[in-house]
Image (tube, rainbow, N blue to C red; front, side, top):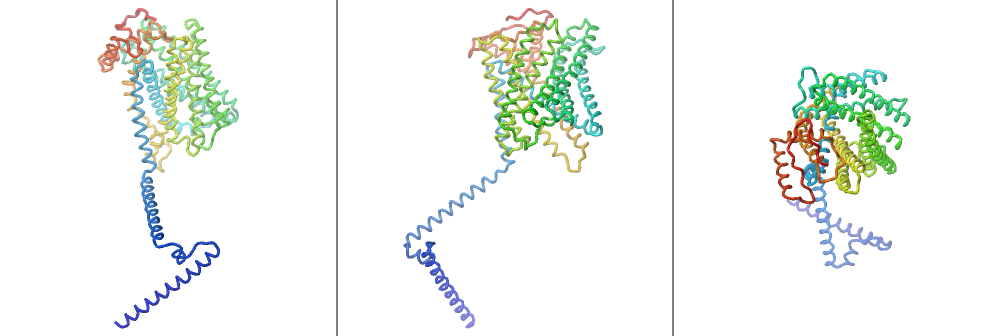
Amino acid sequence: MMRTCEDHRSLSWRRLLYLVLFFTVAELLGAEGTEHGQAKGPAEIVKAKGHGEIMEDHVEADENLKEEGEGQEEAEELEEANPIDITISCMLCGGISFVMMLFYLVNYDDTDIQYYAWSTISATVSIFTSVLVFTGIHGVFEHFVLEELPWNWEIVAIYLLLIIWLCVLQTVLMLFAGQFPGMGAFVAEERRMWMVCWGTLLSHSSGFSSIAAGGLLQHLEMIASSPLLVLGVVVVHGVLLLLCLFSTEQLRLIIGEKKPADSNSFRIWHSETVECENDVVALSLSFLTVQSLRFMISGHLPNEEGLEKPEYSHPALCSLGLAGMGVFSVGVVSASLLLEGKVPAAEHPKKQRVLCIARDTAAMAFAWCIFFSAKWQLNSFLPNMDPNAMEARVILALLVSAVAFGSIFLLDKLEDLDSTGDDADRAIVSVIRALGILVGFGWEQSFEGASECLSTVFISKRSRGGTVAFIQLGMSLVIAFVVVPAWRKYILTHCKIAEYNYQNQVAKRRSRRLSTEFSAELKASSQSLARGTIIQERISSREMRMARGPARGVMQPVQESPDLSPNPSPRRS
């Protein structure tokens, strides 16, 4: 016990000695700091300040510590929002806003805006579905056929694949038109809608197959070094396509001569096939032309899908140059429309068709130029973001959609003016349709990137190339199985009804004058599709409201009964 007390005493003396030494050293350091203009020691601070000031300093220090603690807590709360949460939040808010915007557009007071909105939605869905299915099939074909062939036989194989797509297009349209031996005449409107549905999908798929064939030629080593040679491929590829299409047209005319009793069925089949074939040529030639223009302006040839390496950053002058080529394409559209009006279709059907293809090609080239110009400009604004990543694709699609619909509103108001002539109105309508295609191209790039990202979820590191191709094909077919029936049953039906209301407005001085046969056919098809459905009830109630008196400057539509006779009376102009 005594020993323990002695130990405590020795320990307390040691602590006291340590404190004395500490204050002595601090006093010496404080004196040196004062002589050299440095900070004072603890004793000097106590002498210089009173106890009240020292207490205030402690309170301020405590408050600063509390503020720092609150700032750290807020920072910790902000750090909890990781990139995945932010992406999902933006997807939810942006998705519901975009859907509500579409509801506003398809129910807008102006019938023109309704038609443009439904047409844009239909074009977006059809392009997305077509490129998805084509990518899956082409991936399987590329893995099992093209990878094993030399470059010359690879060209032959990919052009054979294009011919197969065109043959499938012709066969499906003949099937729904009832042109095979032993099949009845084309009667049911439901078959006509199936014809439009599959004709649109297969024409877009054939167009992307044509893009793949022409892109392979553009990327050959002997051609890819020169922009002029790359542009020359477009000319050669276009001549081959026109020869193929004129050959199939001649075969159709031979078939039509053997079936004179079924002229109406043949006319519908021929017109739908010509329209689909024109889409194939216009889609492929426009994309390949813009590829060569991008090569000339930037000095870099994009890959077959139109993508560039992320490190390529283009100045604003390049973006303006590409946008200027898009404006030049609008001039080509106007010139083609003027020439179409001067060339009689009955006397020169082939010239008329070439002019129609040139007009559609220029309109799609305008859409491609504006899209890639916006992509270049977005890459310059966001240099740290990969332009081919999903974030950049969705941002670009949203920006393009907003600008396109805003331009459609302005152009529609311009077309409604009495000061614009018929030729100017036709050019304006062509530009409006090109803007709708632009929206479709923007979202097609986003959906294609989304499908590629989703396919990687089911692909392991041990998966072989064939397995990957079949997984992508399976996903494409599943998505198409879900999307295509709803698109055909609902979107195409609304689009047909909106087209009838769009074309049949007597209130506006229209440049969209229709032939008597097509006007009656369009009216009969729209009314037969809407008969007995909620859509017809909505149209009837709207007509009843409009019959009471014009609202917001909208004139009364003409109330006509459906005329299904083969020679209906001409529509009022």
